Amino acid sequence: MKKNAETIRFSVSLPASLLNELDRRFTDRGYASRSELVRDLIRAQLVEETWNRGEEEVVGVLTICYDHHRRGLTDRLHRIQHNEFIHILCTTHVHLDHDNCLETIILRGRPDEITRMSVEIGGQKGVKYAELSRTASL
Image (cartoon, rainbow, N blue to C red; front, side, top):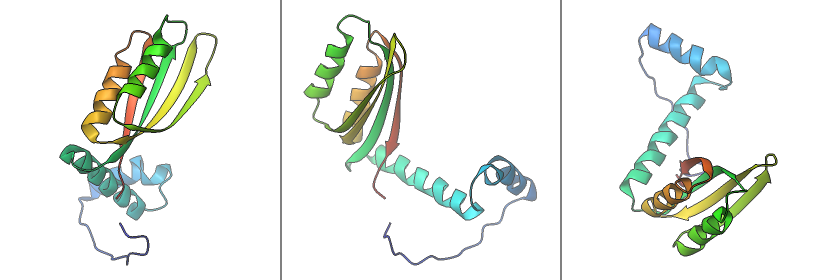
């Protein structure tokens, strides 16, 4: 979307019950307006479609929590990251407590490559949690 794109207004018809539910769940919880909510919903759908097409380079953030005492796990995680043909833009490592580490790995590449890497990392013994957040340039 162009940064200085013209804003166009359009109306949407909804049953009163659906509009009330929308306000109750979203607008009343922090959205500045219904328009902001609708824009976010549209952007989310566009990102989803971009990932599903699989043709464009996309970005993902893989969040993992793991037991850093698990023998060889850190080496396996690094080897996976170095062996893939994905651009790792940044990693952040945080010690949550004596046993657990949290990492975020920002990835850029094709959707199938990023998904494959996230599944491989998340499937390692000692990884307690793995979640991929997906985005794309719109």
